[in-house]
Length: 86
Image (cartoon, rainbow, N blue to C red):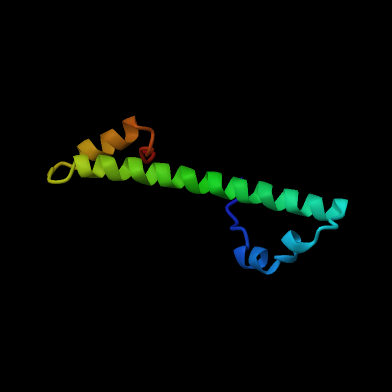
């Protein structure tokens, strides 16, 4: 999956896609491609949201601790962080 964002401004300008009742096969394929791109972008965003939520929950559990090694270990055990190579 690439990290490029979908050009939402372009999609908003393409309202003719929804108004044109005589879609050609090429137009349908274009819409199908856009839906696939939007689904992939949404999946990527959901993965980031999940990671951020898990990280925030672990951070909240460790607020007030003076030893952040416990937090780092919890992040590692949850699969949210990789230890730097030594």
